[in-house]
Structure formats: C-alpha cells, structure tokens
Amino acid sequence: MKPGNKGIKRIILATGYSWKGFVAVFKHEAAFRQETALFLILAPLAFWLGQTGVERALLIGCLFLVLIVEILNSAIEAVVDRFGGELHKLSGRAKDMGSAAVLLSLVNVAVIWGLIIYERVSST
Image (cartoon, rainbow, N blue to C red; front, side, top):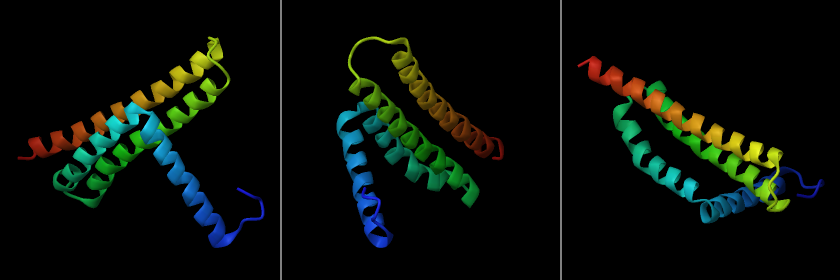
C-alpha cells in the first residue's frame, strides 16, 4: 500500500489485500479448509448450545481464533519456504512454533466447548 493512501481509499485497498489473503490461504492450505468446515458446522450449533451472549461469544470466538492462528501459521510457513527448501534449525523451529500455536488454539476450543457442554449436561 502506498504511504499516501488515506481514508476510505486505504480501507478499500486494505480490504482487497485481506480478501487476497483469504483466497490464498483457502486455496493453498488444507488445514484451513478443514478448520473452516469445522467452523461452519460448529458456529450454528453455538447459537443453540449457548444460553447467554457470553457463552455464544466464547463458543464462536474460540472458533474464529483457530482460523486466525492458522492464517498466521500459514504466513510463517510461506515466509520460511520463500527462503528455500534447505533444512535449517531456525526454519524448523519457526514452523514447529506455528504448529504449536494452532494446536493450542484447538485445545482452547475443546476446553471451552467441553466446559459449556458439561455445564448444560450437569444443570439438567
């Protein structure tokens, strides 16, 4: 983006770049497509399962977090891969850390969904 872009023009350009990012991650990353499918299945269920706005926000927010972390992980992998295919311990470490972040975001989903489901089951 040019430094001189301001106001609505900057917002329009930034939205276009974001859209290109969504298209790229969806096209090139199977994990993102799988997590999007999970989101599309679970998000409607969150409206039914959550009894308060806070519960619904937690159930849906943690799903969004998985997608966000997966996009960041994919960006890390793309940058590392851009510098070549040779093995380097720092490249491997960066990719492993990104993967660990995705795993933690998925554990976060399991914990939040598990606790809210447990609350529903135990209160009946």
